[in-house]
Structure formats: C-alpha cells, structure tokens
Length: 148
Image (cartoon, rainbow, N blue to C red; front, top):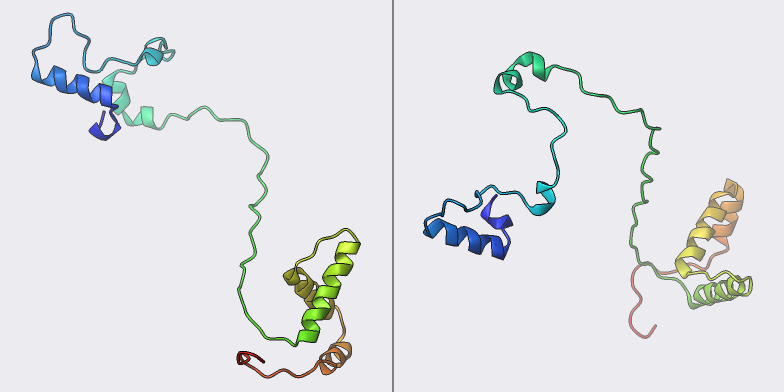
C-alpha cells in the first residue's frame, strides 16, 4: 500500500513494526482488513504457467447482455454575453411586456423577451422584416456618454 493512502493509525503501526523486531505470533504485513477477511474466493486460483500463456489471454470473456442504446447526451447551447444600447422607450416596452407576461402567470426575463422577439422576427418574410426594421428609431453606435 502506498504511503499516501495509509491512515494515520496504519502509518503508526507500520512505523512501529519497522523499527522493532516482529514476534512470531504477529500478523503479517499484508493482513486483510476485517471486511476483506470474511470474503472467500469463489474462482479457482490460476497457476503461474497458465496465466502467462497466450492461449489464456485470448480466451473469450463472458459477454454481458446487450443494453438498449443510450440517448446521445444533450448538448448545451453555447452562451454569448453581449451589450447593446437602446432607447428608454424600448426599455419601457420591455417593462410593459414583462407585466403582461406576469398577468398571464408567466414570469419573463428581459433576455427571454428579446429572444422571443428574435424568433418572431425570424418567422416573418423579408418584406415584413424590412418594414419592422424601418419602424425603429435610429440609435447612435457605441456607449452613450454619462447622463444622456
């Protein structure tokens, strides 16, 4: 057993037995734990000669019954953090939509509303999408200065 895995009691016993002479009735150093001592081996012991032969290594192992194929693990979507600027009127619109969702007994986060809006825009045809984008108030690109 490596020294790192020994318990403090086992380490103390090992240190004491290493420095003193062992009496004739002492337990061998490879003594099993009480839980292991009760177990009896059920398989016959292999001889050293049969363990080394190539025929013994090539012997087929007992096969386990076939299990149903597992479902492939569900991959989580990669999340991307982004910041943007929008007018206060659009923030007020988000607050209104959150209140409407809450009245319908569904709590909604701002990010959920924005994602739902993206999915709704994606379902539009090109002419409707261009019309919806044209109805937006233009916003300056970049961070607004403090107090604006």
